[in-house]
Amino acid sequence: MSLDPVRSLYIHVPFCAHKCEYCAFYSAPPGGDQVQRYVQALVRELELIAPDCRPETIFFGGGTPSLLTLAQWETVLNAMHRLGVTGAAEWTVECNPATVSADKARLLRDAGVNRISMGVQSFDDAMLERLGRIHSRDQVYRSHETLRAAGFDNLNIDLMFAIPGQTLDIWRTTIAEAVKLGTTHLSCYEVIYEDDTPLYEQLKAGQFAVDENLACSMYDELVDRLAEAGFRQYEIANFARDEEGRTPGAIPSHACRHNVGYWRGRDSYGLGPSASEYVRGLRARNWANTTLYCEQLERGRRAKEFAEALPPRARAGELAAFGLRMNAGWPFAEFRERTGFDLREQWQDELHQLTARGWGEDTGQAFRLTRQGLRFADSAAALMLRTDEAPAHTCP
Ligand code: SF4
Picture 1 (spheres, rainbow, N blue to C red):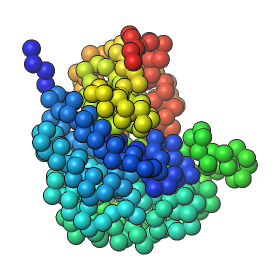
Picture 2 (cartoon, rainbow, N blue to C red; picture 1 turned 30 degrees about the vertical axis):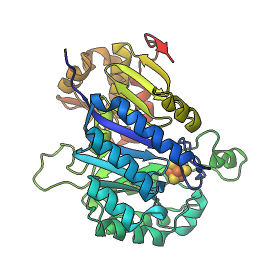
Picture 3 (cartoon, helix red, strand yellow; picture 1 turned 90 degrees about the vertical axis):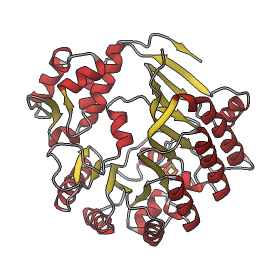
């Protein structure tokens, strides 16, 4: 019996020129010949999964993928072409405004990359410095022009709010500048204080306090201003432009299809150090250690830290949680088709709780979070998980 190939591919590039104050992603400044070694290991990993992967969406994230040199990108792209792992309808590469060049942008565009996600975070130089970003506000504008000139018209920018020291006025100005730039997509995240980050240590040391009310006002401001500017929110943190005449409630045409696939539980390969994947019922993660990753691939095997088969109800609970992040929520029929479970039956108590709190609503066809519920989506999602069901097995 032949299986359908996996249609989604994520590749993690674990290098950043400098670590931002808030960042808990796996990434580090590159040393010695590490990037070169990583590129060779990644090519090897691509060779291992290529027979089972015909991606409709590809996402290079990090870390800072745009930190790879022209020659390193050529090596990766040539391998992808040779292996037939290209031609995705949506192919995104994350870029830092400080590391975009005209040559690199053209190379990516010619290879089939058609979407760029730029980590901007703020249009205020003081905020950028507070976050430890390596780029300036001016560099955002220059990189944006470079990307446009290379032919990219599907562009996302990432923004952050509730940055220590950020006022509502500063945030309003950032939103207005982002809108004016004319990108098709905006991803906007509240600062999260992750263990082992400098920002968390500063918070613990009492150097500043978190103002929850201000963060709520900033989120409200964001949702209202972007709606006025013609963006459609389709997930807690994601807003996209839409073509005219589309069905109300449908996912907007410029939504990130790769991420929508993730929230809807689509199988996806994850390559590179620390990358996670979900393929045919098996969830796995690569070691978050670039040296170990390279060593394993040099021996001809994938560098998985673990692989586990989730019991169907646990996986369905996870998907119930992911899907509620989206404004459309979960259409009941689609949830049943994806998971084999009836959302209204199996999560009856939880749906009642969410409705009673004013966080959720049953539209007849779907269950979705209200505007208030979206603000507390992490708590709502936690209700849906079935953590009492342990993975069926784990293996190295
Ligand atoms: S550029 Fe992104 S991945 Fe790199 S340290 Fe900053 S936030 Fe983390």
